Image: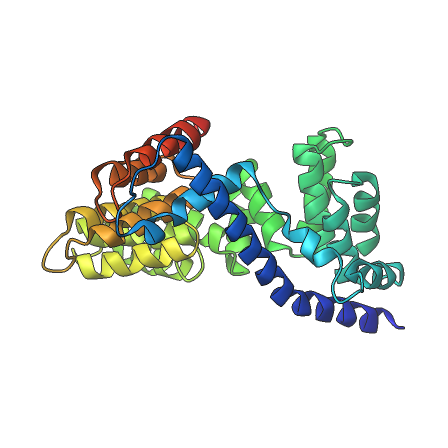
Length: 328
């Protein structure tokens, strides 16, 4: 079997595993529901309210904090075959993407082998990953910033935008950031938009540069949303467009944009944004899922007051004691 055939078979097995993964997640949800019921009944039986099934989603997340199922375990063996066997075979034949994927897989369990695979790949991604391994250090590999820079520079010399941006930000090199931006690195484009605006104050140019960065960068999306909401930075006040960009940022994984959306729907900003506490709860919950302490605080408040979700003071207390306190 050639390297490409082995890699293609590996990806095929992973795609076939999606149904198994979904079945596993459904089982996990059932187990979590049992845990949730036990948590609530232990504190004393009480109705959660008519929206219990809707609101309990957030508690399922809490249960996952203490009882996690490994998605990787589902991917290890599919239909009686181990995808890793094919990935290892392709990597042994110097298939670059296979070497990178296998190295990523081994980084925690066998960092020395992972480093070897990254190096053997002789690729920008491999050098970039090596840079991070040495920049941060991992178990079994000591932090070595000088060595990290060597690898970042190696990738940057080959035109790797991520490495150029990393070096540019950490060593304040505007030429490297500019080059990364020219290679369509959205983080670099956002950085340059802010830098140029602070230097020139030109709102027309800033608006153009920020909108370009916002094609992929959620921080840029969020700033455009904030600018439309407040009518600043060269953007006219337009709550409807603010909502659009906050939603784009939230969908791209921004916890702060999700909290802001929760607040906008909670308080409302008529006529553009109507008050909707159920929608507010959903965005607060999403923010919590993304790691926001403010998100969890607001979720707890919604449960405590029964706003946007069935009232359940026990659930509110549990969230505060587990999610909020744990997140400092």
